[in-house]
Image (tube, rainbow, N blue to C red; front, side, top):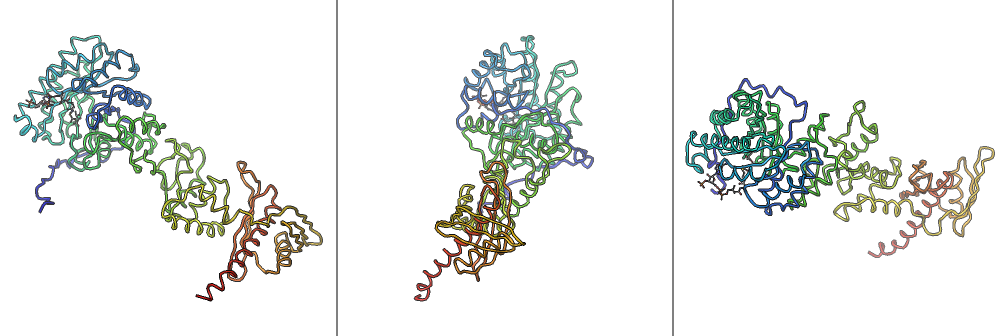
Length: 564
Ligand SMILES: CC(=O)SCCNC(=O)CCNC(=O)[C@H](O)C(C)(C)COP(=O)(O)OP(=O)(O)OC[C@H]1O[C@@H](n2cnc3c(N)ncnc32)[C@H](O)[C@@H]1OP(=O)(O)O
Ligand SMILES: CC(C)C(=O)C(=O)O
């Protein structure tokens, strides 16, 4: 059997009945560090060029990142050159600290410091893998062996820093493959590094605990973080950082639970580009906080800029369902969702505020916060309903319809959606509305009218094309119906009639909608005009014109049907 689960082993869980983190709630943003330019970069088919790195760096700065891992300067000339360019061209804002990664190898550490000459502040991040697999198979050593690599690396980092006291240094250590390392081993090695770096004496130290590969449910990672924090030397002087990957699709969840477990800082990438299934997605985690009313301390409002930048430098397109950023994440095609969204949006106080918080079904955040428009939250296909069609008409055409007409008109839109098999866009819906409701049939344009009320009766005279009608009734509509019935010798009753005044952004001021019935045949029509009376007369006249056209069509088709 090729597909044989028996070849895998479960990841050990931590026995921690005393765990506290499930009782904690995140109430403030962690310290963020963006690692797009390093972890994101090392996972690309085509690593970024220096100009691309500059573009992404500037985007990260605009978003408000204060710590940015800019590369692995000992890895390649472009990585080295980029760090030099940032420093020599004075591109690092005063409130931003750059971070660089190096293996715990003296020649690489030396080259790393060479790249940093002249920088005001920097975080030097050194790592070595500590996992059982890597100890046994990659380094072919034991715990003492990997601990010695870490200790030597930490010492080497500190010695180089001491040669450049003009720079404010922060040291960072990662027991890489932490999630594959026994906790006692991870703690022993981390504490040995802390011992060398002496954070109690004022040296800033970050201990980063990576889910280099995500191997468990996020609660297990949180247990590990809580355990490490309990067993960490000089904890109050150490910044505990998380670096999660997304192998099981829980990179963000693991980071969130890790923060609940006491971590101070989170590393990740914009939109989650990174090794294999990617790094923890900073946009998602920050927006998750934002959607809970917590200041993410990042400004992601120009999401278009973020997406364009990330796509340009990574050559990876953003999935349309990508959390918060995808093209479709604020869009409903399905009727019941559309109906609820439209009703909630109509009731939502604008702008939403602390007093009137955002509360719209199916939209966890206000799309406008990320530069999206309410128009695009509803798009129409064969899964849509009348509420959605009405939303499109309201947003794109600036008109609303009575319920009976929504029902009748949405059937026309449904037919068009089924015929096309895809989306019916706003322009098409507008054209369908014109064709089925608004267009005046040829020869039925009301060019002039007179309406008078006397002794409780309305008398109407109107010119339609070459025809002149005269009618009398209890009201305007019945007078028009009377005139049309007499003139054309066709009886029809008005089943529904409604009129609305229109918003300022439409050319006309009034909209009238009517449904008439003749036997089994129902006809809808509407009309817009600058005065309500004309709109009402025209709507009934247009309905009549459509009815006569329909009857003529039926007459033409009748012999054919009989012949068949
Ligand atoms: C989980 C992560 O994302 S960690 C970051 C990974 N990122 C990268 O690797 C991108 C940049 N890396 C590179 O460009 C290259 O790997 C370089 C320039 C750093 C090193 O290149 P090379 O020395 O030619 O090769 P390579 O990376 O294969 O070196 C592996 C050697 O370093 C050792 N090594 C690997 N990682 C470390 C480490 N963190 N600390 C100390 N030694 C290490 C290995 O045991 C191996 O030793 P061996 O030569 O005795 O077998
Ligand atoms: C260097 C470390 C932090 C890393 O990238 C990882 O473990 O994924």
